[in-house]
Amino acid sequence: MTDSTGVTGGEPIKVGVIADQTGPLSFVGLANANVARMVIDELNAAGGVLGRQLVLILEDGATDDAVAAAKGAKLVGRDRVDVVFGGIYSSTRQAIKGPVVDEGKTLYIYPEQYEGQESDPLIFCTGPVPAQQVDPLIPWLMRETGAKTFYLPSADYIWPHVLNGRVKEVVAANGGSIAGEEYFPLDHTDYRETVERITASGADVVFNTIVPPGVTPFFEELYDSGFTQRGGQLVCTYFDENFLNMVPAAHVEGLYGCLDYYQAVPDPFSRTLLERYDARYPGDAKFTGGSACSGLYRGLQLWAAAVTEAGTLMQEDVIAALDHARIGEGPGGPAAMFPGQHHLRMNMYIAQARSGRFEIVESLGAIDPQEGLVEVPALVG
Image (tube, rainbow, N blue to C red; front, side):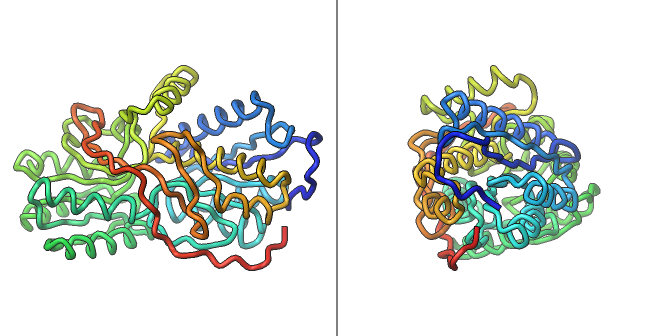
């Protein structure tokens, strides 16, 4: 599946990216496609990798797991790419994993914040996990607001189920309780009865894991109920500036999130990166954290650094280098792969939506992923 030579020059290196450029997540996928083009162009302008140019093969996952799986099969079977990036929903990661990793034995880098627990020698994850989001956010929220009771309206797939398990553990450990927990199909849009139950429960916090397209009508119904006006707290760990564009600002005023990057992060590199992106891609598809732009940027740069260190595209050598790869500058700050875990140690931030923008209310510094060690058998490239 991979070029095993270490000689610089020669044929271009093929990089596959699956981004949801159509369907309910198109506002996210279009931004990810932009990031992939920008990073590949910048790497090529700096001389490429191993003295070879990179060729981006960009596929539309169409916010459909079956489509994403088919595109993954194409990338490894027909295009014979050296690495695959992409996927937002955890169900999409699992769909891509089948043809790319299980069958294609090809390196796969997943860029989105998610529930954790992915452990495969061929998969690296470059977005935040529960130890970096739930563990610091919930105690901080309970301490700062006095909140004690949580309601968990959720989409019915792996990410909300696993994340909610962590939420319940952390809430209980900090003296709180769960007032309700519900799961709905991804395309569910009628949340009137759910909001009635939230109101009747008297919950202090709505910890939301409903996703598009349902999240917009849910937030509208919750706002109309007067939940936040009565002092209720709204939390959504994936919400970022792209998602703010989906809803009226009033519907999510005061919403708390915890991500590896927000546009308000003040470090000079993050600001310059955002300026470069905005100049090249003006419009609504923003460079954001919860939409996986930050994870995709990091993943591409870390992979390029690993290939450079390995001096070859031999997959086992690239994986060995990627296991300890680091970048000194990135969106939100530096990042480093935590050896053995295939997840990143990186800076995290708590932010709050105010007047249609996110303002950082707490900089948490670098946090370890606290994922399990990946068992690495002998790999065949």
